[in-house]
Image (cartoon, rainbow, N blue to C red):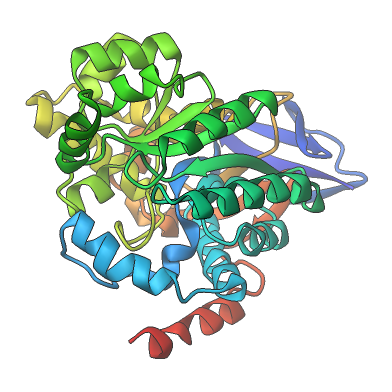
Length: 415
């Protein structure tokens, strides 16, 4: 049975949207509802759902844990010790909570890097979302650990077909300070041979830059270019501390960059050079990072902070306007991940949301995209559909009470 959205607003016009299978079949007027499940779109607008291009989803279990600390202290003395206690079942429950939060706030696709791949994949599969998942690769330049991580990566790659085709597989080397040069070279070769994306943190802190220069005589982007790591399949998160020369390298190598404004600001990691990157031609998308450094997965909030931060940093209120940041959060992420979504258009994947135009945050309603970026919160989102299937209707996700209850139990365990 197909899906028919009746009488919904699209670009200021009222239309019907017909979904067959997992694609938008036709956009037009008054289709025959026979053999279709009908959703009444009256008083609502149809918009593409968000693509969260950089997450550590299961860190929902660490929301507001070890806040207000320096990034390296936060990682080494708090987060990594806690993560070492987690098993696959924990990661599964954290990922289910993350999926719930993303669905409720209009995200249906995310790019994740974390431990216990199978726990996250199970959660995404069950929740009906779309994701590109990478098992984080960290070896700390230990040969035995590197061999173990490489074997794990190969095995997970073989096991990826156990899950829905909504779930893509990527490689996730954490950063240049946690992964050896030999492993980075191996990851690049394996990814290129198997047509895989590589998800990595690059130039997030000044310490990372200083340590790289001290060890190699080069800045991170320069060094990664030297060892042959950079390419069109690399998705780089943060990229805060880069020179004009490094930006030219990113453009030439077609590296995709993910902006994570809330996390960057909370950890005081630095200011994202949006204008320089954009004007140079770098492809940019938007991500929330993990809940321990954000502390939520709401792309509505991320868009607003991104737009405001860019205006402040560049001392220019015209930088990163609402429609531009909305593109970063939708089609920008979709293109970075190679997913055919991000627009309401015939033939595209049926990943979209229905927004309640009568919600007080969207009234009087001069410009819907401006309202979504600067005014909206998740209460404005009524219905979320991914791959042609309804994940949330009337603001409710099936089974959400159970997911929340199971996740709340972790408070006692981690305190």
